[in-house]
Length: 106
Image 1 (cartoon, rainbow, N blue to C red):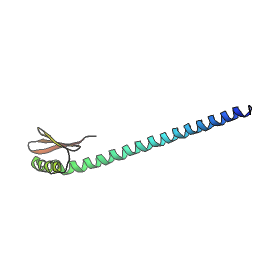
Image 2: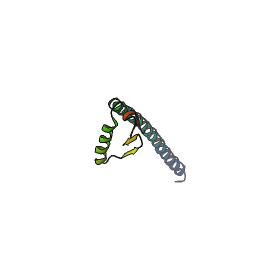
Image 3: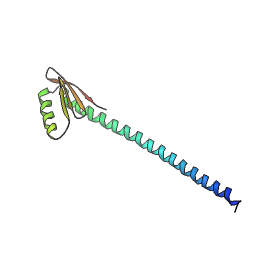
Image 4: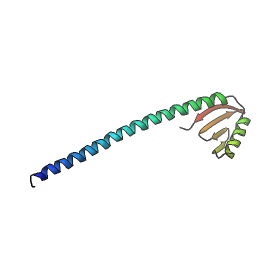
């Protein structure tokens, strides 16, 4: 019985080490998945921003005000500060009644 105790202790230590190693591998895979998801979401937001820029640059600020009122009724957070419209995560800069810049809060 006394000779078996070191082997039992060795086996338990080996199992604990193997378990911790598997947790480490799982953490590495989860980190890789998170990085690829961030990359995918960044590409998606860049695509959305390019579409919004193409559609809104040069349009009248009055049509942007109409859009912001409509989206506000739907529950989107909308704010106006001077010549800047904040619609959800988008920031529209206007000058002279025309949209001149569109940014995205990343």
